[in-house]
Image 1 (cartoon, helix red, strand yellow):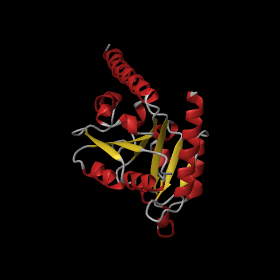
Image 2 (tube, one colour):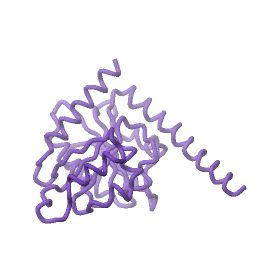
Image 3 (tube, rainbow, N blue to C red):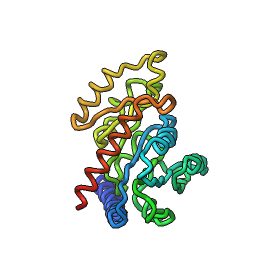
Image 4 (cartoon, rainbow, N blue to C red):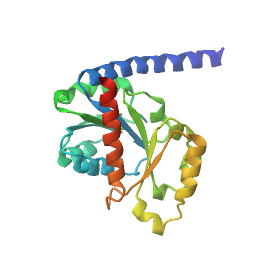
Length: 225
């Protein structure tokens, strides 16, 4: 009896989230906005990657960012300095963003002036992957200092994402991280995924990431016709 009640509660929470995600997806489609949901553990470099991405993206794109964090507006302030629109969601201890949060804050952005919306999720390799936020793609960020054990230890995150950005590759000569093992682990969990190696510090590999965004954006625009 207890197990049955727990399953019902989970279904209700996800159903509510999925309804909000469909609302967000509808608004973004109506405004012709392409949306990417970035997830990682704390310290993997999401905000730094976003700062560099905003600088490297062709000027034809107007960028907005929804920042998720437990507290403070520090990340949103960094993004605004980079030249993009940004709003901050503080979860006050919550371990992930859900679609109801996105729906509530979405209209605080100048949607008519945005082509690409990035969502920087709360730093966590467990909860964020389970929630549809109305995005087109879920992307996981892994960093070299985290070690090779994160992909096998957190398989659900990497099973539910379509691309992995391996950040901080400038540290490969100094740390015991094996890129070949990481690729093998990723393909074993999710053969449909792919990995881009980059360093947001040195800009190595950023061109491949920018090309991926361009290609995905154009494919999405074509599908919208």
